[in-house]
Structures are given as structure tokens and as C-alpha cells.
Image (cartoon, rainbow, N blue to C red; front, side, top):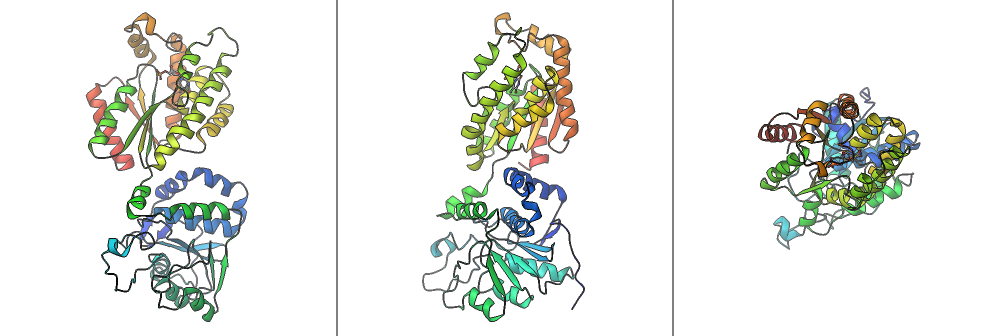
Length: 426
Ligand code: TMP
């Protein structure tokens, strides 16, 4: 037997694609609320960790049902992972009818229901000189009887961990996977760990009725937030980007805060007494209430529908205005923000940076009656807010881009489009 080369993490090879750390980080970030569960204790339980990773890899798949990720482990190490993405261009047979696949009714359906995740992982391990002998295979669905089950047997896998032993028979005449595994002396266990119900629910949700439904469900909408001080021009840029993306055929939702959850919240916030010693706390409470509803009712459903969400201000403003501007504890604001956003992270934050002098100059040009309570704040406040935004951008350069808000609308629109293309590939 060859020496086993152990890989400690999921990085490296996934199927036949090499993932960068940043790509993996992004996959995990999308599922931040679930990842929190893993972090909060479940992480110690290796089965949960491996099962979770198999699910995460499924999400990367190009296969419409996305139930096609697997992880192969030796002891407490992931040695290789697989998914079907690059190899099969087929719609998934679980969700597509023979007619849709162009298979005549009499013909045998020989497509693999698990779409080669296991066989991909095994061939990848072999290519890298990693032995899978005696290894454990974690996969949400039972490996298919025609390709993946024989591959797993041949690779010396000793134990298979699945969410459900239920099999999908791509070929009803073939010997079922469970029987093949039994004959080969392989143990098959259902995973009932702490993430069990969650993963079963996620998997069930992914088993969709028709091809159209599945293709729709494949796209997880990107979430872009526009931020900046007063009068920085972000609202115009939200509209411009929305127009450009719609023109390219994307489904787009534009929204804004405050008022995204409860439309009357804006007025309530502006009407607060500026002399009130509890002003900052009252502002924070109102922004949080509005945001919680905004995510629940608007942002989360739109993203699930695959829409690109463009939002004018969000929780980053709370940090800049109530945190840096009013001096509230940043940790407390962080907790309020985490609760309100329900774990949803932005894919990109675009900051339009302008100096406080420029802010005040632009405010002055406005009709006196339109000037809001925040706009009436002194220059020092606007300076702290600006620094608050810049500090956040510096902390997380991967997700932020800072644009010079004094440039013309046309120039900025082009820069925004370029950034969206570079960072998100849209
Ligand atoms: P605007 O949407 O017209 O820019 O007005 C909203 C005002 O509310 C703006 O002055 C910034 C302020 N604000 C905060 O202080 N904290 C927040 O969390 C948000 C979303 C806005």
C-alpha cells in the first residue's frame, strides 16, 4: 500500500478543479449562519464537519440538484473531495424527465444520479498519489450503482456516511448500491449528528420538481451594498448599476435603508430629538428594527430567488454613524448588526469617499427644508463618519472597494461596473 498523504483542510483539489483559499472562503461565507453552528461546538465532532463540507462542496456544483458533493477522509483528515461540476454538462436525472434529457422512452437511462462526485474524488486522489484504502466517504446522497458505487468499492473505501440510505435507481435493472456495498463488506451509516436535520432539510429543498425550477434555484443572487457620507452620490450609482445589470439580463432588486423594512422608520429616525441624551441608543434601536424586517422580508427572499440585490446603505452605516460618529461601543453595534442581518454577508461593498468639506458644500446647495438631522451635524461628525467607513474598508479589503466620490457620475458608473465585474464576475 502506498503511503497516505494527508491533507488537513478542504483546500487544494476539489474534483478536477483547484480551489483557491479565497474561493473556498466565499463558499463558506455564503452559508455563514450555518457555519456558525459548526463553529459553536459542532466542529469538535468530525463526522459533522465532514458532512458539512460535503454539503458545502455540493453547493459549488454545476449540477442543478446540487446534491453531489463528497468528502473522503482518513482518520480526522480530509484527503480528497469531489463534485460533478466540470465533468457532466447534463441536467440532473433526478429532476429531469427522459424527454428533457433527449432519451427515448424505451432507452435505458444510464446517467449517474450522483453525477460522478465520488468517482471524481477517487480519481483525483489517485492522480495525487493519495490512497483511499480504508477511508470513509461522506456524501449527502447514496452513490449511484453504475459508476460511483463500483469506484468506491475499487478504491477500498470501508465506510460510507450518507444522510439517507434511500437510493435513486438510474438503472432499475442493476444491482442496487446497498447490495453491492454489503457484498464488498462496506459499512453504510446514516448521519444523525447535530447538523442532521439541517442538512436533510437543505437537501430536500434542493430536490426540485422541474428543470426550470432547478436552473432558477442554481443562481444565488449577489448582494452589493453602496455606502458613503451624506451626498456622496451613491443613490444615483445604485440606479445606474441596476440599469446596466438589467440590460445584461440579470434580475435585480434595488432597496435602501433606513426604510427597507418599515417605510415609516425614516421619518421616525429623522424626527428624534437631537438634544436627547439617549439619541444614539434610540437611533440604533430603530435602525436595527428596520433592518431585521428588511432582511427577513426583502433581502433574504430576493437572494433566494437568485436576484442581485443592490442596497443603498446598510449595517456598515450603523458602524460609521452610530459607532464612529456618535461614539457608541463598536462591539455592541456589531452584535445588533449580526442579529439584524441574520448572518447574511455582503459580496461587495462600494464606498464613495468624499471629504467632510465636500459633504458640507453639497449639503449647502440643497434647499434648507430638505436638510436632514444628520446633515445638520457639524464637520467633526462628518469627518468621524468618513473615517469610520475608511476604517471598515481597510479591515476587509477583499469585500470593499473605495471610489473617489468627487469624480463625475459617468466616471463613477464605469468604475462601479468594472469593480462588479472584477470582484464578482458579473
Ligand atoms: P439617506 O439614506 O438619505 O442617506 O439618509 C439616511 C440617514 O441615516 C443618513 O444620514 C445616514 C443615517 N444612517 C445612520 O445613521 N445609521 C444607519 O445605520 C443608516 C442605515 C443610516
